[in-house]
Length: 528
Image (cartoon, rainbow, N blue to C red; front, side):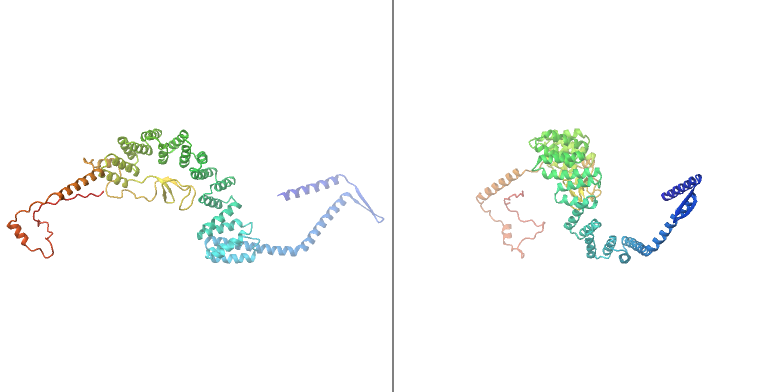
């Protein structure tokens, strides 16, 4: 388009020039070697322009003839290169489809048509063909050769990383990932793998630094980066809690600013503040977290904030949590447990039954069993509540990759993934009741609850007392003087004269009764 405009402008300029000369006629005289040459000005200008055009055409012809060998060579070279790139494209498609024979054939053809130092994709095609054919040693050699070229270094490191993961060489995979992340922190696979490896080794500072590089390179979104940073800060705060409460407090509070609904950060921050005797601020953090989402660990931490509190004080703190989130299962369970510790059995039973009505699950029925044991000690009723707990759905827990943990962990012990634990009901639980009978229901459980026995089982002190009395009676009976033998009668004499049975005793038939003799004292034995 630009050339067309330039050509049009040039024609217009020439036309204008000729029109200007035509409007101003004149003669042009030239004396050369004594001869006078005279012509019109317009004719002279036309001749000069034609001469220039002729010179340009002659120069073009000479240039074409002079450069024709190079042009022919370049033509055939371009044609060969095009064929090579066509073979390379076909080979990569074949490798992606898993056609090793065609991929190997196209790799050889590409290497014959294109110089390998000019096109690094040939080495990639050969490595892919070797992987498809199962020649992993050859593939690793190709990837190692790629790492020596700055243009293909990242590609070679990724290939070596995947091979190391396939072989289970985690240390080698870690080194390849860290090397790639140091050279190019914008690579998602390298940064994520390095982040997980550094987290597994407890190198929280290095992991946080790498996360900042990812965020600066815009490899990871801001929201996700803030969440990951909160997890790393909470993990570092957990390690600092024992020896550096102030550092743990700062990390946990920073994590809460990044992710306000992150319960582990709130718990660690509160525990660190408790160690610094900042009870009011710690309680405020736990109350805010409880309002957002009640969690059993938050409730336990809040109720047992001060070790010197009495059971009644802990009950008041539990009731404070219930006031923040009324009619909530976790709130009711926390109050029920605190009431049980304070031996307020009526309140504990009422709250536990209310929790079971809202959500009949394992923890509510187990708590009912604990209340029954503490209040009545009736083994039948305790077993009844335990059987209901077996039928009820399981309680939520920290779950990651099928692994159930009683506490939050920053990494999954199965896959090593960061921030993998989720608070939910574990998978794989038995659906429905696991034994015959109706499913767990508080109304059904109360309806079928056996009555309390009138007599409670004897305590260990009474058992010892009974044993001592029976031993004393036995000793007194043994010290009593023997009674005079009675005069034998005819029946007793006949029985004494009767020979004993062949097998050494009387038959064990229950219908055969032994002769009446004076009962011997018996000692009552009890296992305790």
